[in-house]
Length: 408
Image (tube, rainbow, N blue to C red; front, top):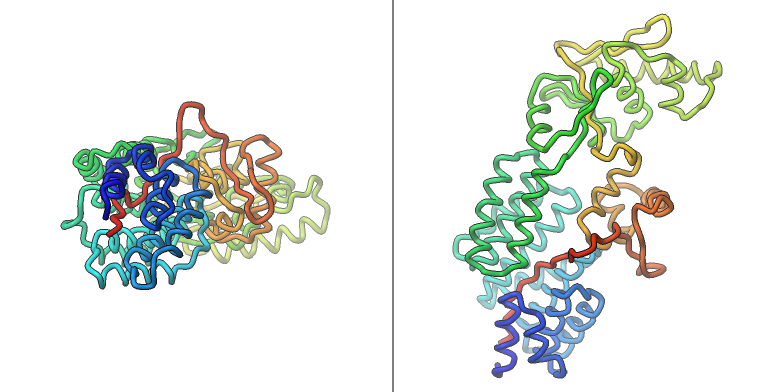
């Protein structure tokens, strides 16, 4: 490795992509292309970064399997940052195996963390936790220990384990301090902000208030009857009734929960469940059918009783009924899409559909509605089209990459 390549790699390890580019910007050899790709990725030009890393992988000879594997890992990181969730998992797994077999444990570990981060992003938390348990951060450098703790915190947040998440973020902060990389420290700070940001609205007795993640955790651990509009389930204690695939039943449950201990008129229930402005006899007949179905699914935790003007919820062994809703009151219908776009990254509609477990057509309709309201913006066209929330002036998106990426 020549001195310029060594200096560029050290600059990237210290979080200085411009310093790296000063040394290799005009070079076209394989190691320089790889380092330029990483530098461009750290600067936010993901399209150019991806092209440079692919050129570098082709430029390395057939015997330079370790260098080619490192390029695959870096390209996977760029794909993750650009929310291209369809990149080949097998290619990253093969690169990780190659790196481990040749003694490059640092980049092999980083490849593992990329796989875990993708699993977390698309909601496959059980797989992510199993894989995370097989990664030992003790012998890793501070930068990778920071990433490990960030991933641990991400899983804990999604599991509603706020104490574990705060402990992991505290460890991440200490490791980032040891690494002395500003991008890592900023990433930890951004994750801490998530825990101090309202995560849901609590609606009961005609009023509402915002809840932090700790408040949501405490509520779900209590014996309250909760109509959870964030996950589309109804629960009391450990008993959970999933209604994500039954939107009419959930709409009825939510309307009844918001009105408890009062009842809801039949015309209001028809409008909430079926979208009809005026309830005719066919709507009323359908409402009776759907209320019967709701009674059956809620039987272990609640009943639904008829009243002279409509229906009322009758929870069993619960002193309060609470409706949890997304924190964005005006955008409940598309709040899940906005929540993903709020990370500041650019998403494709296919990646959003994969992360939400919805059809791409459904996601596209939500994107069009949000764009028409001026809440999101897009760039590119066709299959290269990406969506994101409008950037906040004065702030930039920080990309985490395996900064060292040594090229031997």
